[in-house]
Length: 378
Image (cartoon, rainbow, N blue to C red; front, side, top):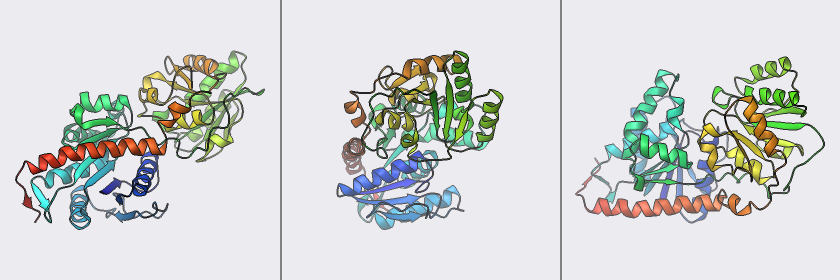
């Protein structure tokens, strides 16, 4: 099978990491794989071995990018296109609609599978006009994809109920979240020092990083020594630092460290106080090395990445008081006996689930193509 993976770039975030991981796994299974980068050529990271890479013109508008995609399809002739993130998804759906009823050198048009990584409706309020227009387009066009992959069950629920995606077209494919983590070496973390609240990721408004400082301050007021370790960067870093100074909370800035989980102490608790999350890779990464986690239950997608009472705790709300209560419950959890749950987020399990969905939808796609009269691509 020929599979094209469309993503903004080779690096830059979780979607790019997943795209590279899926592309590499599919290639090892004997599929021909190419990657198409909508943001243009990218030399920040090497592509997986045996995977060809095509960069679209970074300065081109959406219509021009669709035309370039159409040219790529006519030349490389993929059986399946898998896209990740909203903008690539919309480009690929536009391509699909432009190829409706056409055949490419005697073959049916490629099947288009899009992958949504976020709970997009929760981020519309207060967003810039350009972002709101993009989400408006997603609401109206996602239903036309041949298959839709959701990162978590809450995301799948939004796609079906809010975006009109037929349930039979939608599937949850677990993220290969343990791909960067070495085998678990710690099952219980009970040290002698203060609780180390760990922030791992971009410091942006959605992540509400200031709540980590407020939670540490609340624990300190309760007589439970706590500090904050920041593994990441972002526009709110200085504001978080100033907040820590004001509240007399120790804060350690490590910068972005990809293997952050290898640099935490024995009393670490990962804190993910986000207002919304499509999933939360860091929750699985933490569990894989024996670090318990706390997340706000209202973030919704975190419920797929955290098992309350086993790998961490869901706070009743995003207030410092409720987050501190959850940290107290989580900090002494024994994370043994979760290996079968972790297996769900392995590269192999994620790849097999994706491949099964592609194969199943491809049978439906080809049957539908045979039932219609097609004409060759101009």
